[in-house]
Length: 430
Image 1 (cartoon, rainbow, N blue to C red):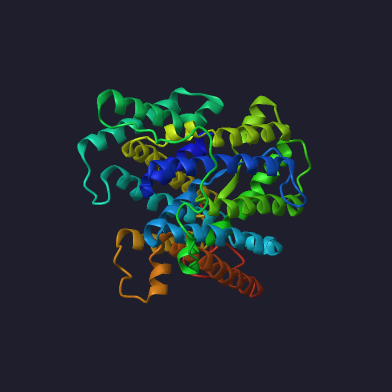
Image 2: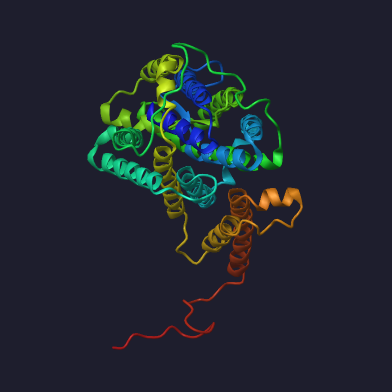
């Protein structure tokens, strides 16, 4: 449970090149919020939290979008985007059933795939630096970190595989110190402190810049639905999505609102503990609540945060490359659940949506001559691709449905069509 927040903060600090003290404070905030989120989801307060054995973690895709906004528009705008996205999630809950229909597997697959592809470039810049020129030592250290991560994933079994990223990172730090390829410099500070409020300054609210996170916050409702049903079954409770999903989403939004004030990205309920529960047979929500309390204690013990803040950037870059590549593969897996092999319009919608999303990534100056608002929307591959997928899925699906209805009312062919309409079916040779 601790591996995801730690690695996420490393990626954030390395990408934004945060000072060691800010990194330590951010890690402390993320750990405390993960613990508070687990307590809230497990125990529940009023209509917030589903009282299920859930844990809360910083979402990988959400963090990628947060970093994209921070790089394009500044960290204050990224912090404001988190607050806007959390507020939007609360606002749309009364329309939960309608919103979920807008994000079938095709749309979610396109969105996640584009996020992964876009952020692989960010991971590379952690190794090369802002100018894009990589030093052989940094590239070698990043490659060794990737190799260590892959080795850990292959050798570890069961729930321990979830620590592969953290294990690879630790191996990368050790290699950096032993071989001299990098330096390990923990941040100075006291033994106990609270996370810093508004580490990036006063949040700035820009709806257009926040669009990637706003769209993503809506897609999380579909993911929350599946996780809630699965977790209810694992815990031996009858699933009730209409009641439980809004409770889970409210807790996510509330913790994300607080997180935005402490510099984190969107916090999302994770299904990591579902597999652990099925393997171990431990399904009590009080176990996840205890884990949440432990995370809060670790987050406030700043020596841990300060030590982890000194990891070399090349190590973070190698680990982030694996993380973002996995996110892209998750998008491919989601697209596999969509019917792209049939004669319907889904394959066309997916193809055009990916084209719209990849164009600004492959040709960064394509929309430079457009007005500012259009450049913000079209220049973000994630936003352009997701909006294209939503529109085409709805429009082409409706057109296809009307065409089939009209075709059926006219009677259609009485036999399978081969060649021209009305041609008889060819007979097999006797």
